[in-house]
Length: 143
Image (cartoon, rainbow, N blue to C red; front, top):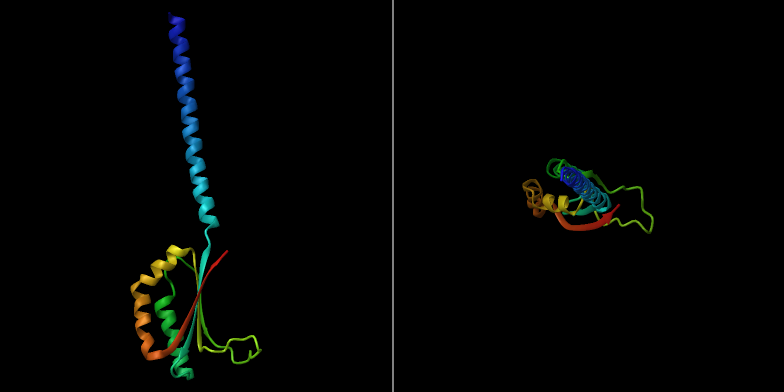
């Protein structure tokens, strides 16, 4: 009888140990799968080209400064730049129908979506009617 109880205790111990190892392995696999999914998720490039009502140097600077004030430093942005059309590059393939270009790359689509709803972004959009006549937006998944 004592031997049976000892064997039963040993079997229970082994079963509990195996169950704990399986649970730990499952948790580690879930964490690794989540990390892999995150690593594979595409970043989102958000390129915006503005054509100004008055494309004077002062207005170009005004828009560049507004972009820096309202659009830089948002959570989830991995790259930000803003600048003006390069006047020297006039090859047939160059699209020259803009004055200011804004380039943002977001960590993922969710970061982009939060940026779109952010009050600083909305303040920037409200400046539009006074500054530009046309805005072209190019969004693409990038890795």
